[in-house]
Length: 541
Image (cartoon, rainbow, N blue to C red; front, side):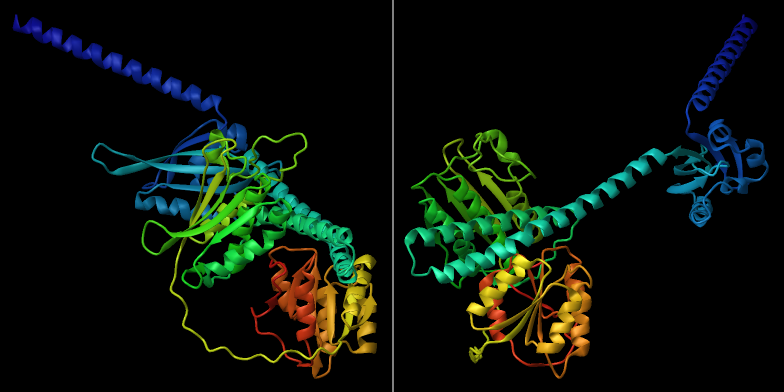
């Protein structure tokens, strides 16, 4: 009886081994069929013997390399690899001796000369005792993805170039319009109310177009992480006051009441005053656009939850925000439902810029609304800082109002001639040049005290003109003011290298430009310190 049971156990064991072998064979066949059907290369490498134990058929089919040659010489794996990428892959294989895998991307060159991109990963395979004995790897052709990525980068660069060119083309006609509006304002200061109102409308619409251009460019800068903050201790009431002043005329035109409740001198934040002013100006502009005549816009400041934080609220009684838009109101190009007239429309950019700039300051912004027709409340939270040490005021001698010799250089004749008329109206002697070479000739003839120079000239760039003026000037160098329609991140570096004293972006604020001219005078011929180039408050790059 015992012998029969033993024979049965032996038979069962044989059946189990046969079934296991059959299952393993079927599994190997499935793996073989899988390896043959895909274009990715699968391989097994043994670091102790530094040889390949297996490579899938795709190696010969897709890479057009001999598997037998690879088994005979593992260095054959490097043969199709681009010579600049071989050190990277060799280092990755050497690293396998430590028992860790790797993930790299490299280029290969087929026998046909075609270049392909490969994404390769190696995974350790351990024995039952836990020791890494070999590595399994996959080599995937990612050429299509790489080409798509490169195409996206190219398209992104084209988009940035387009935005910069668009801004330039929009800013250039705005410059003579602004100068002409300033001329009209001077000539009709005591004129009929209808003429004064017309000038006011022109000035406000110029500001509106300038805001749209600035926001459009800021989106591209933020997307690429190119927004640069010039942070310092800033009085919150001054920042909000500047934003209120920028929107006061629009609010009055819309018959809106601005109520500002901001403590004076008490709250300081660490940030970029220009960018923070932009934030609150955008929020006020948004509140003004979506408020109805007779409404109230309130700007308030209160301590926020947590240590050393302050919350600024911009509340309106306007059209409100639909519940389904609250979570996305700060997303790029998000807008509520618009009427066909689009009298309150826009590009859907301003609030996205607000959120990005506030986050760069370590703060946050949120929106609340009880629904359509019930107004909205935007709350900006910022970290506060201590007030800087008091510095004794140094009296500054007022400039002598003596007319300056000024050279205006711009290939846009309307811009140059309207600015000439405005400067002449303020008592200055103004010469014009419409090209870089003409500017150098005029400068040698009249020895200007101030040169207002467009950067994009047809023959010689404004940067080169500025350098030659510096090199050819006497001990009293002229004040060089760059005036440009371009506002890309590289411009400030170019401005410093060309030794400009100030940089204004078109359309420049006329009051800022006049202040720079009046404050000018003979100065020693010295090169500005790196990073010390001044920027007018008209619009910083």
